[in-house]
Each structure stands twice: as C-alpha cells, then as structure tokens.
Image 1 (cartoon, rainbow, N blue to C red):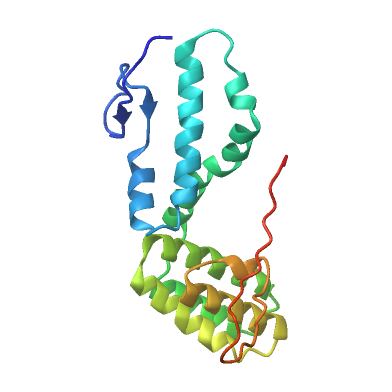
Image 2 (tube, helix red, strand yellow):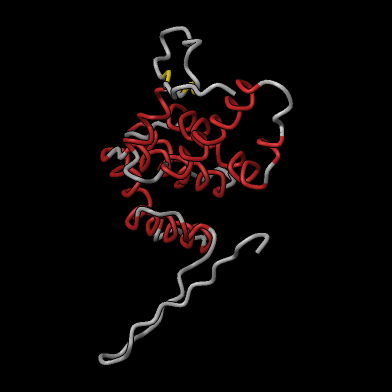
Length: 200
C-alpha cells in the first residue's frame, strides 16, 4: 500500500477531494468544538471508524478484517452519535414557545402521558448542553424547577434527575443515582471505582 498523506475534506459545499484519505463533515467538527468536551468521545469514534473504512477502501483487496475487529465494532456503535446529536440539535430548539406549550400541557386537564413530555425535555436539555445555549438552558431550568412541585411523584423524581444533569453538566444520573458517602475530618479519602474490561 502506498503511503498517502492524511488530508481532511470538511467543506460540505465542495466536492470531495479524490486525493484526500479521510473526509470529515464540517458540522461534526463544529459541534465537537462547541460542546466543550461533551461530544469528544463520539467524534473520536466517528473519526477512527471513518479512518478504518477509508484505509480498507484505499488499500484494495480484502481488508474487511479492519472493520470486523473488536475495537472497530465498539467504535461503530458510538460513531453514529455525531449525526444523531446534530439531528437532535436541529429538531429540538427550546425557547419561550416550547416553554409555554409544556407549561400548558403539564398544567392542563387532558389525560396525556406526562412521561412523553419529560422525554422531550430530556432531549432538549441534551441538545442545549451540547450547544452550550444559555437561553435554552434557562427556559428548561424554569420548567424543571416548577415540576419539583408536580402532583405525580415520578414526574417530580425525573425533574430532580434532569436538574442534576443540568447543573452537573453530565448525564450519568440517567442510568443510576449517585451514592452519597459521608466523610469525617481526618479520614483518608479513598475512591473505589469498578472498571469493566472486555476480553481481559
């Protein structure tokens, strides 16, 4: 295989450069830069998956083993995230209109599934955090604080989780709650962390 310089094609308004080895979409790079670290894992997976595909294509012959490795399979699941996040950001802008609609729906007498509204808020919060959109985050915070007094306990619990997600800047509590540990002055500070390593 001939050595070939890695040249990135990122301009969506131009045709792909045939001399480029990797073609990266500009919107994914801009999304990653604006996300302040929240999308770097997704972008790295997208980059390396694209790299493996382009190397296999440029090498010719049967290089499918590059895409069938355990590492490539793990990355491929994450590599679609930039597109999903980008699409979500375009679909779920959150402003005063969305705030007023959700307030009306949560406070209305119609029998609707409130869980669906919470899921909509969760998607909007994720998109606003990726964009670092202060205005959207402000509107989302307003409605979540109001939901702390909602008459259904499951909605109140979800509002607490989403508020923690908003203030902490991470979504870990969507999968499991943090376990509080009380420490006293003079105790040694120890952190116990379980790490699962596949094929080890």
